[in-house]
Image: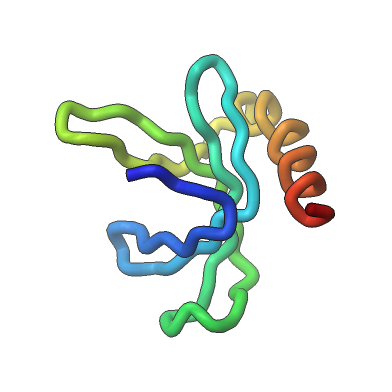
Length: 87
């Protein structure tokens, strides 16, 4: 499954998130997400940084909680966010 900016994705806990930004760091794709209401119509004030992990049968998204890892990707995610807001 390919994830693009502005896609609405549903995580395994059935919560919906809007993809705001993406970046590639050390050959791993990272996404900046913001939570949406159940109907997907309004923004909830919860954000996540997730990374894509390859599995035998595809891929999964894992929440990034390591502060050092977040620090490594945050500037690139902000740059992606700013770029996509002005296009």
